[in-house]
Image 1: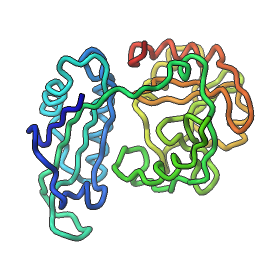
Image 2 (image 1 turned 180 degrees about the vertical axis):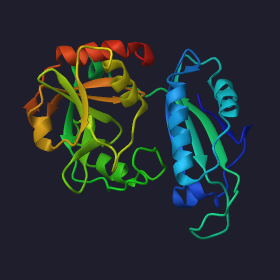
Image 3 (image 1 turned 30 degrees about the vertical axis):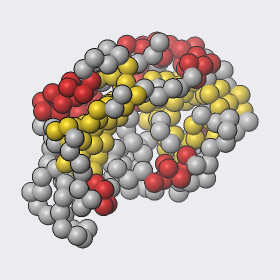
Length: 273
């Protein structure tokens, strides 16, 4: 199963002169699809528009993208929708040309074969040596430049399902493909992403729904020590939903009641069995 529309047309190709290809000058969204419906659509579109505004790329027509998403998702049970927006084609050189037409790619891919045990029993994770650059202008948005995550992912040992990344100052920021939460003394904490990292849509949903629970939540600067002293740790993204961390840097963690409670309150927004 693989369907792709480029600027609304099947069978088209992307120019080698496209700035997304040449410079990573663009954004993307990876969206879980359940029963032909993209989940958390509004949150994904809000982030895409924020990113486009930050980079100065023409804001996408949400209705048009929604129609294209409906087309490629038609008839699918569970799959992955990917939307890529680039600044489009321009002459050679870093300087963008004003009013360049953006390139829009909407594609459908098979659902990843993640083990069910990751969600039920937790995963083993590790700290990565590759760091995330602090860059407030790019912080939060999901731009196409992912080489730091690629390099960090190469470090993973066979028993680690995810790697955790720090910035140059030693603050824990995120996983290679996930956001991080810890529970300590009944309160929830997640890293501050104002200088680096991606503000995941599932992270946003967790923070929103925790506000309705008798549980304090705080966005804060976290260190390795904070994670090592946590009572519970879990990771989120729009495809996995929530994975508890069972082991990190040789320390074992329980899949605790707070993790299970949050897993339950976001269940409707997850593509799980």
